[in-house]
Image 1 (tube, rainbow, N blue to C red):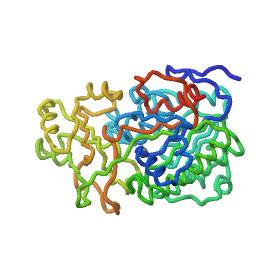
Image 2 (image 1 turned 120 degrees about the vertical axis):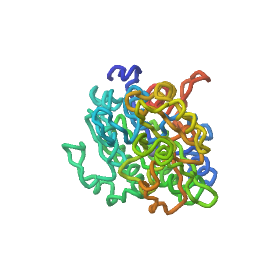
Image 3 (image 1 turned 90 degrees about the horizontal axis):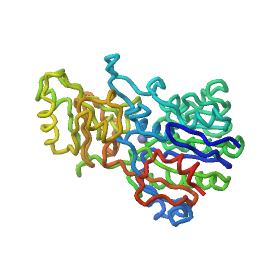
Image 4 (image 1 turned 180 degrees about the vertical axis):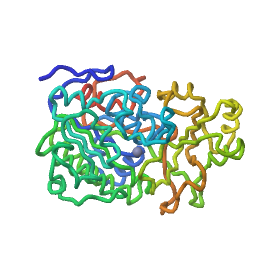
Length: 408
Ligand SMILES: [Zn+2]
């Protein structure tokens, strides 16, 4: 057995049986309790009833997918790993870019460290956008369900995934994209039996359907079956989420949006302020790139304090902070955020200019995330956990600490 592994300032114990961390994208805790109440998630019900361990933890802000997935696999906040959005304004290059490229990562992952030390490691993600970040410097199996038909032994450490999973490549906008992750994860556990596995789903269903609705309950029933199988195969299973999810619309079903770029253009004149929405990614049909977190870049000529006060007075806004204060409070890399950080309230989202958001794909009232209102996430373990101080602030990026160090 290998020695403990140190990664980013934390020690992780070498596993004596497989450990699986599952990041259920957009898993507001209510989805779990509602599915359990409806009787469709018997395995999760057992965990909640005391067979396992259950905490409510905090995700990192912005409550978006990439920053949180990277926090989970590195065990540290974005201030350390550097990924603070799906999308950002690269000041060095003077351009707005996706943060999908591993060159933006500032530290290694727990997965890579264990693979280096000889553990069998596997990563399956729904969307391909995360694959290269999650698989950064990792030896082992790493693929996405989105591109499961393009896997090669050289690039992904596995081949013939479609045949093995027995499903066609799912649409990127479907529940099946996540189901594929679970089916593949179970197949790997049955045959390859990885020592350490990370499964990451997509929040397509959570953007569409509120907790307790038939669509949501079907999804959690599907998940429950596969989690139960992983448990049966002897794995320690830790389930957490990258962020929660809330309704962001009025009673009329229309989204509550502050188009901040339009507002600032009105106040300051056009092309003075630059509003960046880190939720932006290549897959925006189900949320129209509308979330509850925005960054504002300003020239030095603007009186930032006065502007912050003015933004804070807008009815939909919950928090407005200058760069340094936001970096400190949310543990973000100061060089990769705006001069001003703006967070909207639970029922509202922030847009850039109205004309830049295509809302035609929103076939149901908007549900989204990004703010403080989506910070609470579940942490469930299918094991008892060594006693911890009652004051401990649980984070979703404690998932591997729970699975490797604390689960009994
Ligand atoms: Zn997400």
